[in-house]
Amino acid sequence: MGRQIGVFVLHRNGPEELEIKNMAVDEQVQGRGLGSYMLAEVHRIAEAVGYQRIVVGTATVGRQLGFYRKNGFRDFGMRKNFFIENYPYPIFEGEERVCDMILLVKNVQAANNIGHERR
Image (cartoon, rainbow, N blue to C red):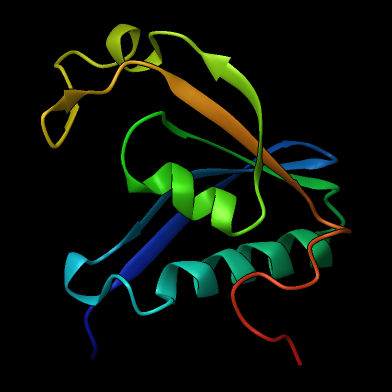
């Protein structure tokens, strides 16, 4: 049996919206396209079920924001002090404290290709 190297958690926000609640890739295999592949699977699921959009919230600091933007997500909102008000202990990305959550969205119909060719 192999080891788990990536995971994502999805939540149905309604009949048209699927949210990525959590997504993680083992640090030892980051940078090899697995995250983009996982986003393509999320898109495939959303498309198969009939969702119109995929949303995700992430910290305003760190590599995650650039990753989602690179994969076609666009900013649509901000939750100020989200990580301060919803977590009992401070969260840091490197030396920087994480405070705000940025919300990103990607329309399912317009997302034909996320990170790899679909056959």
